[in-house]
Image (tube, rainbow, N blue to C red; front, side, top):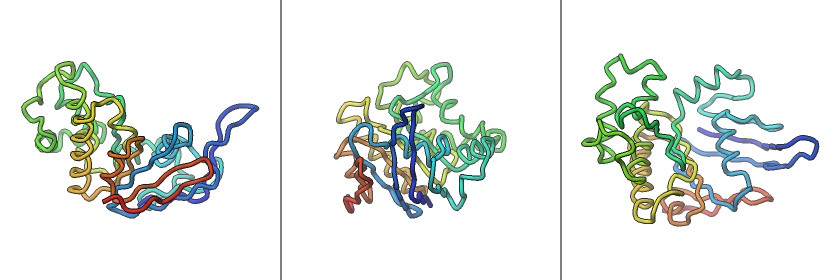
Length: 225
């Protein structure tokens, strides 16, 4: 489902900084992978490359059977909208929309809201135990509830791939554990492939496999479950 081969990525101007050098990664369809590592080793850059938000200086990125290299910005945007769901540390819930409207955003962007998909929004909210908050404003929800809304939004359009970047970083331990379990169950129920970037060993333990990113490459830490 995801294959990165011999990736090199640098940032900066005259004094360029190498973030990834020779990195390779292969994730099978349906796998839930956790990626751990110290700050600055390129974990978020890895997700950005998979999503086509960044392009590598060298190497190839293949997502859902599609080589990203020849795609222009419009094609990459369509790929993200249709095939990828995102869960962020900062939630990115729009404050001027209701909970249900926030969850429906991927359907609206894909032109599917008018095609009988309204029930899908409620289904996803029921899955994260927030059906009774569908018409609430985001300001009325706790941090844990907002992240559950983000999970529902990430999965509502049935993406093939879910990318989660430190989704428990702003949560207390109890809420974090709840959110990670909800994410794992939702991903597995839909048969999606997921990559979870996290500093937390507890969150990583929810994955099928744990990878550790280091300055000298990626180490497979084995099965977590």
